[in-house]
Picture 1 (cartoon, rainbow, N blue to C red):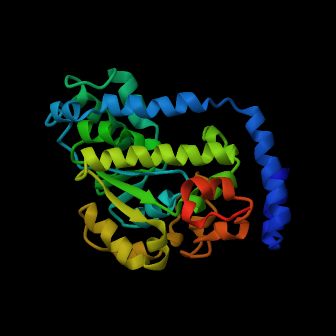
Picture 2 (picture 1 turned 90 degrees about the horizontal axis):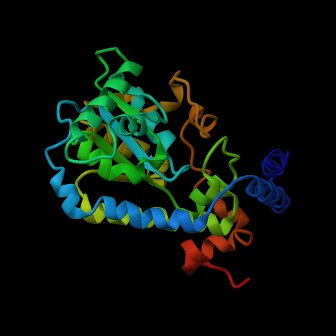
Length: 301
């Protein structure tokens, strides 16, 4: 009810009243979920240890090199991953598969990743996504599970020919968009502004680690650039995944495919810019986020 009341007041631009309901909604949801910030932070150190440079080097040439079918779209939730997939999958040779759990399933089936099973994990993943779209004229399949940003090391080791696209967006806009969303499952860090900011900082730390260790394995695009210079970004994306340009990629909202993510309402509309710097409507209320993520823009409140 509180999430709905927030949306109603936001629609009539009563932003102070809207945020009152939004905070009440998130405070209530936070009481219902189990989230341990200490455990979340320890995962970063563990991820780095499991993907130390010498380990990544030892896996070079061990993955499944027989396919370039997979395109991974990663980033924080609400960072533009769905729009990016919508643009790419508008191409007639691309199938947009949405948020997939197939990578995790392949790892669970074949065991903890090591030099001996990197090939098997990659092969299992390709078989599973091809089963989602047996049409042989489709030569790229997108997987836009945002949290796979944590698995860039796994992807590089098991699927060396896969393409990885990292979506970035203004930190506070990203976090506010998460805070506004009543997620069906997961994202338990998103219902408290302090915890949300800390999660974003963990994400930044992980992505910086991949830039240091696997700089050639992915490209990065910015949501703000996508919505203001759509054709430039779309051409960049299609070129990166190795396909010839198709004009359909300029009208992603015309796609008929089913979208099951939190962005399903937005991607059925033409690309718009109204969400850029949208956090400014709630600038005072969002200071716990701003102080941690954009300290140079923090207010003295």
